[in-house]
Amino acid sequence: MPKRFPAKKKAKKSKKGRSKKRTAKAKTRIRVDPLKEYAEVVANQGIATVSQLSQDECVSNIPGRVSTGCLSLDQVLSNKGEPEDWHGIPLSRIIEIFGPPHIGKSTLLDQCFSSVQKKDGIAFLLDTETSRDRHYVERLGVDLTKLQYIEFKPENTFIENVLRVVSDTIIFCKEKIPEVPVVIGWDALAGTATEDEMSKGIKSEKATKPGAAAKSMALAARLVSPLLKGTKIVFIILNHEYDVINTGPFAGKKRETYGGHGTRHMASVRVQLYNGKNYIKRSDGWILGREVVGKVIKNRLGEHSREAIMPMVIGQGTMNLYTIYYALKKANLIAVSGNWAAINLDGEVINFQGWYGLQIQCEERPELYEKLEAIFWRSSR
Image (cartoon, rainbow, N blue to C red):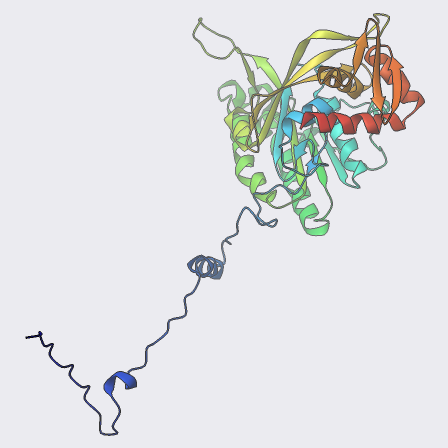
């Protein structure tokens, strides 16, 4: 016989004749985005906000870059994938450029001033060493009428006051002109005394406490860095190297920078300058300058341990056509035969002798430089 299944029990009816299953309505829960809810909770506390790196307003993202005036250094500092006109040092960060005396630190800073002025920005110079000559600075392309030169009284020229003025300048620019790019340059940290040194002279605590400057710079790392968040301001610190007195073969570094670990920690980018191997010569062998190596010791925003060969010409700053010539020659875009070279620009073949001959061509026809620079950036990507 076929197996019989028990009959289903009928649902009990209520007094009104409706089944209990129909009276129990299913409650639908509206799902809330947990990350959005978390952002609201944090914002309601009033001490922080939550954003994503994909958003332009995220303070971790840099709002732009300022050229150092040196193509080779701009190239190693910039990142692939950024806008085409973003070359050089990042805004909203602290930058340290250091090296031995007479290597080109002040020249690089002046070229940054010139670059930001060309973008309708503002340049502030804190020259505690009073090492500027206006005629040389003007030759580097700086508009002297727009350069804000901050001068300290002799008795007030010490690190703590410099940092106070820097903080006040950042706050002012952040509130009054937030859309304007600003370069604040300090020349130089190593040549600036501490408040204790200035007040006590040779009897200061530096004789027994050499870390006085380091403590001041460590404090600046905690005060100045947060002020730069989300701004179009960059703070460039020039610094010197000094010889460390070693007591044995395993004593550590032979050269060190002034200001202790605080300066190294607070800088997002650190560039070390030192002399290269070759001299910069004309076609007839006349020496115009020498190669300077710019090594990116630290870079939180990109690759580090990269080097740039910077052609420093006496009285003129970096000679970018020297960089362009050898870069395009390496990329086989410039053909060389003996002492002569040639390049094809939009169907026009231009002949010249070496990089200096290319410089002469650009002096006669200024429009050539823009084309050559555009080719340089296209070939470097």
